[in-house]
Image (cartoon, rainbow, N blue to C red):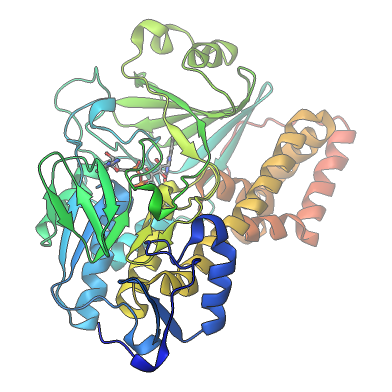
Length: 492
Ligand SMILES: Cc1cc2nc3c(=O)[nH]c(=O)nc-3n(C[C@H](O)[C@H](O)[C@H](O)COP(=O)(O)OP(=O)(O)OC[C@H]3O[C@@H](n4cnc5c(N)ncnc54)[C@H](O)[C@@H]3O)c2cc1C
């Protein structure tokens, strides 16, 4: 890198030679503030002095630079695929390596990045922009409806917009005790797509990442220098970055899951959602996946034994869903807050390792955080201030949106615990079912919350529109009049 001799300043104690954008362990705010004030200047701390350099000479990816991606789950693969695309647009060639130890072709938790596997329509649209189309062997089910079991009633929410396809997939090759032929996992397909497009996959774990003017990635067998490091290790393993990076992983909650054979008469395109269950349960969902059904519980402080309690309390523990018929079982973590210090000079975290949408569409978040981070890396640079200026605002927007999500979830929890509110809402939804799609406000809100198909902020403001209150008002009138609608039915 060329240096500008006129702008050399002596190195204050606060600017350490570290990858975190300049001494951000203790005094991060102060340094970022100073960097921001310098606006078009960058800090180069590759030797003992702090040198201010014009932005045009800031850290950039150049031809044949090496990008190392830690983790070959969705975020890692998306980062690689976006990087290839942006590099092509810029006319540079990059060497891209993904380190991923897991074999996604193994059934059960050993090969699996454990999740319910619902892909939102915004993710499916996003994939198309990268020229990625999911092959039929990866798609387990197309979801057309959500059935909500509230009290004694079942509420049928039909997909409000037929254009917005939602599908279920397995992340790996199906349940641990599943039968042959095992399904093909989404993560296996993505990693394969990355390999086919020229990204090198090393099937080993990275034990440690140190900093010697650039990130150095250490595995059992080798140490490799990276021009840019992408952290895509999710939240279910210890991040291998040294302390000097200053990275603090997101706060997490534990979820529990299991798999069962699909009963012969079970609808193949409906997700069933239940609210009865052990203390701390927010909701549990049964997700169709072809020959199997996934049971996922979401809540606070859940334990593996809660699956049994959930099945019992919702009267699902007849033969098919009995404990003896469990086929898999895991208790993965889900990110519920953003990471801190998730980028720096020559490194950036994406996917769950940075931030995800609250309880929703984590794979979609992996796609879009990876896209924004890689766009920044290719077109704006790979310095802390480039990520600060171009990537951080995107993550902050997601964080703000999650706040609206928390509000909506709190509103929903209040609704299901206040009988008159619940009845009004049920009547409102039932009435909306007979209305044209653009007037189905409550249905759209709930569908968006359950599927992650729309951002929480839009849904929150939609819930405060006059139309929303009018629909609820009609529902309240019916509830007060003691009407008991036949709630099971189609939305059309
Ligand atoms: C119970 C549950 C249900 C969920 N349901 C859904 C859903 O239906 N739809 C949805 O969109 N999202 C869902 N999510 C969220 C979703 O799973 C995550 O948001 C998504 O997996 C994030 O992708 P990622 O690539 O960031 O992380 P991960 O998928 O966790 O991938 C991280 C990868 O990094 C690898 N790795 C870790 N450490 C190292 C290392 N040191 N060296 C090399 N590689 C390493 C791991 O092996 C792994 O492959 C769910 C989550 C949970 C817990």
